[in-house]
Image 1 (spheres, rainbow, N blue to C red):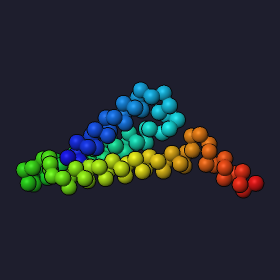
Image 2 (cartoon, one colour; image 1 turned 120 degrees about the vertical axis):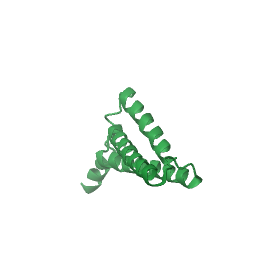
Image 3 (cartoon, one colour; image 1 turned 90 degrees about the horizontal axis):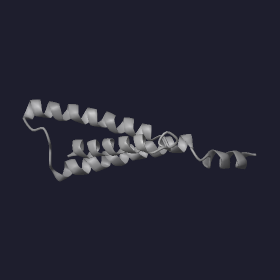
Image 4 (cartoon, rainbow, N blue to C red; image 1 turned 90 degrees about the vertical axis):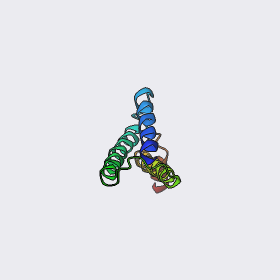
Length: 100
C-alpha cells in the first residue's frame, strides 16, 4: 500500500507543479522529486520482495500507515525547503529587521 500511497502523492504533486503557475516559486519541484524518488525506491523494494517471497503488494494496515508516514515526511522536507527559501520573504526580512 505504501507504493500506491506514494505513487498517488507523486502524481498529484506533479500535476500541481505542472499546472500551477506559482509552482516554481513555492518549490513544488522539490516535493515532486522527493515523491518520485520514493516511488522508485519503494518499487525496487517491492520488486525484491516479489522475487524473494512472491508477494508484490502488501495490503496490511501497517503498510498503509507507513505510506501515510512517508507522505508526511515528504511534506515535512518540502516545508523545510520552503522555510529556507522563504518565497514571501517574511521570515528572513523579520530576522534582518530584528538584527538591525
